[in-house]
Structures are given as C-alpha cells and as structure tokens.
Amino acid sequence: MTSLFDGVPAAEPSRTHGFSANRIDRRSEARDESSLAEAASDPAARFYLFRDDTAIIRPDGADPLFTRAEVESLGAAAVTILLGWADTGPRLAATLPADTPIDESRLQSINLRSLAIEGAVDPEHLGAFAQARSLLAWNQRHRFCGACGSPSEMRDGGYRRECPACGAMHFPRTDPVVIMLAIDASGTDERCLLGRQPRFAPGMYSCLAGFVEPGETIEDAVRRETLEEAGIALGRVRYHSSQPWPFPSSLMIGCHGEALTTEITPDENELEDARWFTRAEVLAILSGEHPGGIKCPPRIAIAHSLIRTWAEAV
Image (cartoon, rainbow, N blue to C red; front, side, top):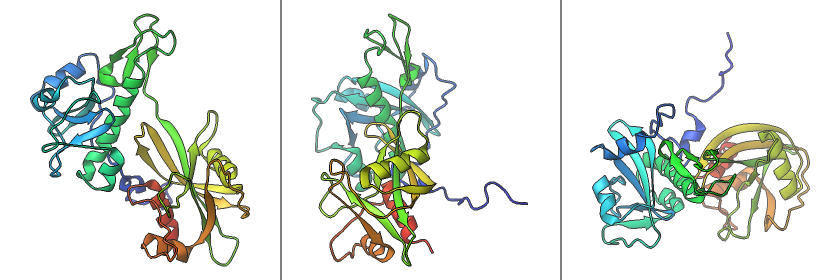
C-alpha cells in the first residue's frame, strides 16, 4: 500500500540549515502572565544575552547561556522574554541597551550571521538565538499600539502585547520569503539560474528571493519574483525546505522552479547580474574551484542547500 509520505526523506532538509533545529519546548498553550516571572526566578533558568541586536557570548566557545546573576551584573536589561523550557530548566533571552559596556576580555559581541558562519557556538543553540532575536526585536519595535498609538504592555512572556487604552492585542509576526532556484531542462545539459545583488561580496552568486505578498500562494510568489527579477517564466514549482532567518524575523521558503523561458532580462534595481550555470560549473563553485572565482552562499544558508541539491542530483 502506498503512502502519502513515500519518498519524503527521513532526514528533514530544513534541519540542516543554520538557525534551525530549535529544541526549546515553547509550551505555547501553557504560558500566562506569571510564566515569565516564575521562569526567571527559577535557579535553573538560563539566558541568551544580546546587546542591542548582537549576541553576547564567551569568546572561548563555551556555553553561551548565562545565569540571572551574570545578566544582572552587566546592567539592567531593556527587554526580557521567555523562550520556553529545556530539559535542564527555563530558557529566557534578555537584551541590554546598545551603550552597555562589556569586558571584552571575558565577553564577545557578535552578529548572528557571523555567529552561524564561524561556528562560534554549538549548532543546537542557533535556533534558540534566532527565536530570541526575533522576539526581542518585535517587542522593542512594537512598544506602542498600532491601533491608537498608546504605549502597549508585554504579555505571555513576550509573545503578545496588549494596549491598556483601547484593548487591542498584538502578536509577533514572521515575514514569509520565497527563495528559489530556477532550473532550465530544455537542453541536453540542465542549467540553474543564479544572480547577484550589488551588496554581495565579490564573486558571490545566489538564488533569487523575495517577500510573499498578501493573498499570494508560495508557488505564485516564486513565479512572480523570478519573472520580476530576471524575466524568466516558471511552470511547476517544488518545495524543498525552510529556514528561520532572524533579520529580524523572516521564514525563508526554499523551492525549485521549472523554467519555461530562458532569455534573462534582469531588473537592474534588484540584480547586478544574472546568468545560467551548468551543473559542472556549479559543482566547481561548490568545491571552491570555479576558474572565475565565483562563489555561492555558505552551508548555513538555505540557498546553499537548494543549489547543492540540484547540482548533486543524479
């Protein structure tokens, strides 16, 4: 008897991306107004720490979690939120004001991209850092009610804000972003479409990407963004995997798309260049041996996985 799940890989592709595989038990249905205070006062509570929008870690690669006393020794936290629970106790996150001094002989301030690329902490912590960064940023940016403009108050440990003036409730948002690799199978040798933006590092090419708009399916967003950015029409779209992207709070939805046309007309406001690459060229890029010095995003990025999955397909 066939199953709907026949052919679905046991090793979920999304788990291989940076900022994924978050092991924290969120207990979303159990959080209430007392949860944050109770969790923070638990002797087993541990904190992920930020200063403004950068993570604070120990430079020796040790455990990135801090006790409540260690956090308080650095100064008053601007925002503290409850992430959830681990096997050993509550997990929280706190952010210090941007001007808070830190002892650089003991602590290091690092942005999340570098944290992931450099492998400065165990990968199991990256998902928690992403969750923390997203929630802290949302609470900091939504201190006022979007309905009446009055100051809002944090509720449910940071997962909701409520306006005491008009009663409006506000919840964290995650912005869906499609990221796609267009594939041309019209010739004897398949090709994929990669582009580069002016802000990319020299030689860097990647998948195209763009925000999903209201009232739009993922598949239609993949087709629209590819057509708008590169002038390539797509037919069938196949989902591959997803990746939390905490800058500050997006969900990257990775897909492969079937190219129906091949003539590239790049949007010069979005792309500096776009071109088709053969499988042999992409394998050379992935191995760091492309004769033109072309590179692709690092392994932590979902774009890398989309490119490698196609290039290594048999």
